[in-house]
Length: 153
Image 1 (cartoon, rainbow, N blue to C red):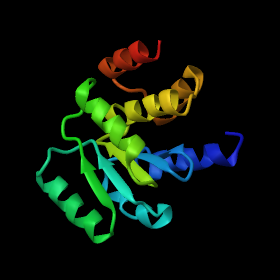
Image 2 (image 1 turned 45 degrees about the vertical axis):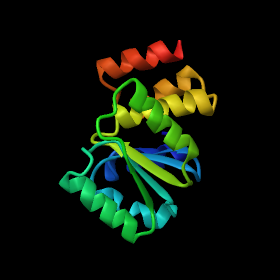
Image 3 (image 1 turned 90 degrees about the vertical axis):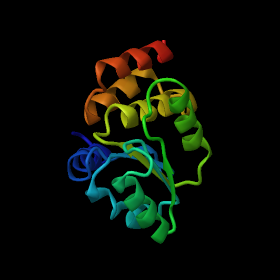
């Protein structure tokens, strides 16, 4: 690793469960783990998008309560998959108040795909950069890869 950015990304991926920067100062990604809660202090989060839990399950209710107490808007997309709900999550990511933290259970399939599409379609990043990002955060599963390469080709 040659630069500070790579070191921070490497540490973030291990210490904060696939934590990474999608758009500096605005959009961050992560896995769904208890270790993410201190991040709001560092990032000044305004919005949290959860791609991991069923709406109204115990984890969802806890996150709604916690983020509400912290003054962070909380949005849930319970069973996100390629298609309409993915488009809704992408729209929410584009339109929500920033800084925003989003993620799924492992931070590679749903969250990784959302990060990839945002970087490719909104930020205009090339496929090479998007693939490099996948490698840093673990490659999405086969069905997500088919969706992503179909969308980006």
